[in-house]
Length: 311
Image 1: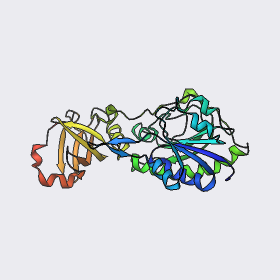
Image 2 (image 1 turned 180 degrees about the vertical axis):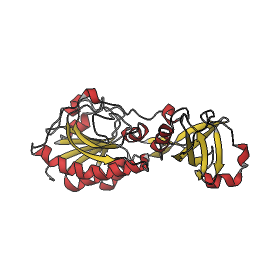
Image 3 (image 1 turned 60 degrees about the horizontal axis):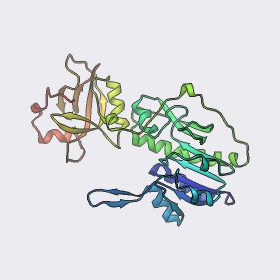
Image 4 (image 1 turned 30 degrees about the horizontal axis):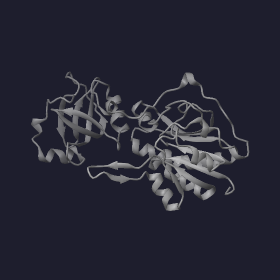
């Protein structure tokens, strides 16, 4: 459908295969993505993954700081449809009402569950056993528009935020390519969301990253894997910020304060929780690289850690 003019709006790596598919099948007029970031002490300028791919295609790239004020160039391109995915700003109504086929969003959850900016992380952290992709019409609310199509993905205990990201990314493109023609020819379904069933997945905060061992083993397990590989879970041990990257649920219960390290060997670091224990398999000390506990114990006196308490 190269006669259909599309603007794509997105920012992270999750969106890149969607842009690839749109370029192949449609006439992409431009890409809208978040402004470049300055990173590190040298303030090196970093492009978003979507901008990098768009430049490879020679596409127009628009990067409004505040899209609610800087929308004229988008309107002037007169797109037939706007496709968004993890763009990162609220789209103003003047844009939403412009394309003849509307504005649609590819959202990484089964709406109305997990509305918001961190649906992949929160699906695992909050203990969901399934999630998916929803394609929806956009409105002025946060992921509240009418739903068009969905695909489900099962969440396994072996999944991390990274692996679930990849699974959802893989199913997003086929669903979008199947859905877009129905929107253009007017045969698509349109289902209102039940707001009474809505849950929310707001962007991950620093507080979300903290592991509280007063929670159940399952809750601790879900939080650690739900933050792997970005931004990472952490707990404090003697004023040191320890990143916790992978773990498994322990088999024993202990009459000790939650957070207490009770065992440390090649199998892992066993830490007491509210209802049992967690075996930390991979961790990272401040200023050090990520390492397995099996390797970590080679350079320490294990007895120095037993009975210490994570906070």
